[in-house]
Structure formats: structure tokens, C-alpha cells
Length: 270
Image (cartoon, rainbow, N blue to C red):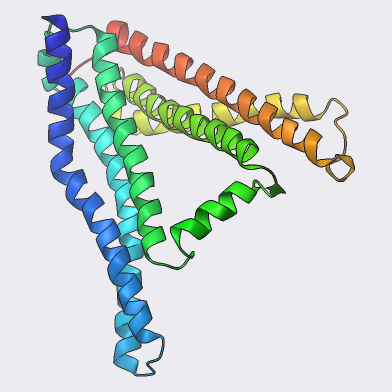
């Protein structure tokens, strides 16, 4: 029964957001292809109208790229707020699922759509043809990653670490937003304002912690960059990304328990 309810919870969250996200995601690559077509048609044309149409299409495509990410963020906030912070929250907390499962359901949906937005934007940029063909992009990525020439295996390793780091940062950002909202909603007045305030408090706090950590790491007499050979630099990149993943994971855990604690003990639903 519990597993079935968790499945229904995820299905409902995806269904509620897919009505908005899927049409938007479909529009981005279509606009990218249209932008590619218009750009090619305008290459040998000097007419004002043709150039104006090309500029307009490029502008609309740029707006679509931004809208894919912004809409995902807005939906992430609204779904969490409406489901857990308003009167609807009373119903949600009476379901046979734990607070952890409620948070994870919102988190999974948010992360999936956020990664989807990044993937769709990348696809949209690729199909515009402004960065060469897909083969050109892959060839460049394999032979020259992070500003260093390297083999395909070395490049793949760094890319995997970078994707893991990006995913963990995405999860941490979602959980930080949830934590700020949960803290803000515990106040009797100005709940929305306090949520925004605590988001920036947590954001600045994470920046301070990261600055202290990296300042400590790089202040221990590290070799100057020009003096390092290619292989030590490559190893440094592996280590740096690994540390970044560990740090992002630590933030994920901290923000999760902060959100969980506020929802369990201090949330004052109105």
C-alpha cells in the first residue's frame, strides 16, 4: 500500500507539471531548427525585412531557452508551497507516506525537470547549427576538455564527474529552496518575505563555507598553475571535482534534514 501510494504521489506530481513543461520543452528544439533555417535563408539576403525576421526569431529562441529554466524553477517552488505549505498541506500530511517521501517526491520531480530543461536547451543550441555539427561538438569535447588536451577516456572520466557534480548541485539548490520555504513558513507573519530572506541567508552561508574550504585547500602552498605539468593538472581536476561532489552531497544532506525537521516540528500551516 505504501509503495503504491508513493508511486501515485510521484505520478500526480509529474502529471501536474508535465502539462506545462512538455509543450515548452518541445518548443525549444523546434524554435532552434526554425532559427537555423531562417539564419541560412538570411545568409545571402540583404533585405531589411528578412534580417528583421531573423533577429526576431533568434530573440524568441533566446526567450524560450530562458523560459525553460525559469519555468522549471517557478514550478518547483509553487508545487512545494501549494502542496505542503497551504491548506492542501493538511491533506498531504494525512496520506500514508512519510515526510521524507513527500520531500523526495517533490525533489525527484524538480530535479528531473531541471535536468530536462538543461538538456533541451543544449539540444536547442545544437540544432541551431551555430556550434557546428554534433560530430564536431563530440570531437571537440573528447580531445579538449576543461582547457586541456586529453584522451577520450580521460575526458569521459572528467565529464562523468562533472555531470555528477552538476546533479548534486541541482539537488542541493532544490533542497536549499525547500529549507528556506519551510523556515519562512514557520513565522506567523510575512511568511513569503521570510522565505526569501532565509533563501539568501542560506545562499550566503553556503558561499562563506565554500570560500573558507577552498581558501584552506589552496592556501596550503599549492604549486603555481604554470609550473604544473599536464598530468598533475589533470589529477588536480579529478580531485577538485571529487571534492566538489562530496561537498555538494554534504549540503544536500544538511538541507534535507533542515527541511525535514522544520516540516515535522515547526511548520505552522495557515
